[in-house]
Length: 185
Image (cartoon, rainbow, N blue to C red; front, side, top):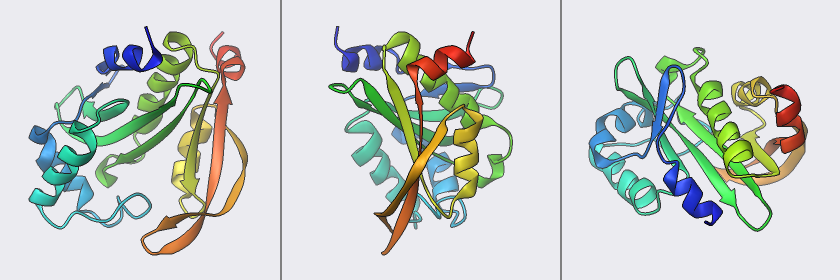
């Protein structure tokens, strides 16, 4: 079985407080709620100007190619509060994590909880050797999430990406399978 097939079989994951699951058009109102907040999407994507735009993005991004793309749902309310991606690089046995969560849910540890479950999936179930994440150098809160999940800062990628019409530096964090095992003994 390929890593992609294994990842597709693991498209529904749980943590203590969260369900990580595919995003569907039924989630459009929740996606629009956080995607229309300028502070929430400041470092990730352009603000959604309508519910229809959120629906289109769900169809184009999440439904068309669902591999490794998870909605973050609260078990307590069944509300979708954000998304987290697990971008698999099969030849090199590695992946990259990316996430967005509604501002109303910041500071509750939801993203570290979801990301830790994806690290577990990657290292313990898929046999990956490395998982990394990037954040815009201005987005210190995202870097703090990476630190909370035992990732180590590896450096700054200068002029690495375009963010809403301007060039920004990205900071790269990573964790290896050996570091994961050491932290989970």
